[in-house]
Image (cartoon, rainbow, N blue to C red; front, side):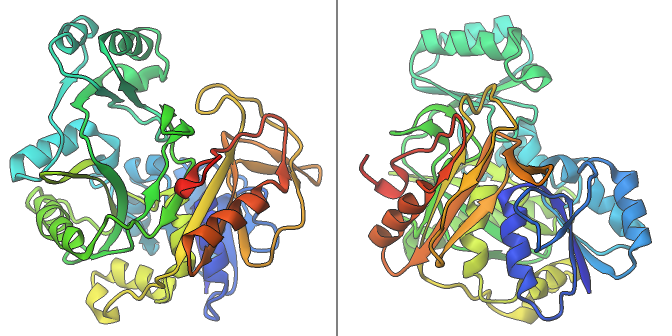
Length: 420
């Protein structure tokens, strides 16, 4: 059988590599793909929101029997719903389910209605009212855009002056365009943060391993939030006791809440959790495989991914039993274009040296132009490796990312606790 992947990130690169190992998979196509997929998948020059074009491509290629949809804009736009209606098997959540990630207001209302532990918040579409509100709040404070920003619309304000400046930048100066016309102002929840991606068939929920994600652009967790500058596992503070609490108080209740709202949620349901002194809180929800987390998770899932995807679509995850995973340590470090997550240059020549055999390189913002590999996005490329201890993984990851170069290249030097 052939498979179509929708997306262009390191996630699609990692997914293609793992699916290629399955003897049942003949050809992999990717819309639109990236410069690193040559020899693994056939990249098709279409947009992830060109639903008519995607349908036409599937109709012209009947041997494609599975489409994996990951971009949040495709999910929110209803691509999975459309493909299912047209008789194509698609992995990913429905359009209403994508609101879990794409609408802060929807998530907060759901948490309040069903008693799911989350952060205190207030929504504003009026700048002056929002400015008045932040004068009454404790600091630090978190400001989030209601609209989509590819993981960049989260700002941490240390004091009232920063909050007022940030609020002006987002709502008046339109730093994130229309996405900032409405904002979510949240309390800053103190504690350790982990990301847990789960798989659900709409009836049961299967958590994958917890991952540490390093969202802020600079060392020491400062600067703007991004979609991820790196990741590591295991998340040592996510103990079996904490895992049980998250499952019983957040994961299962969230799935049950979605059922009660009439949403048949199938696919990936992810949780950004803060481990506080008084229990766990969910501060963000995710409707897809995250990019950086996926790069260290996919190769460690020992149950065939094809079996998992098919079981989710069929609403029968129970038939595969437990999803088996390796317990190895893993580290991923992301190299970005200078200036990211704001304005950055593109189409700089990208050079990759001799990478160690046991290290994986995943392309995201890359493109082949006249046979030459160049940068094409903010989060350009990453290296990932796995092993029996974290120290060796960290050393190997940084040793190999230093073999990659392009103008303006930036990466954090402290992923997984590394000292500069």
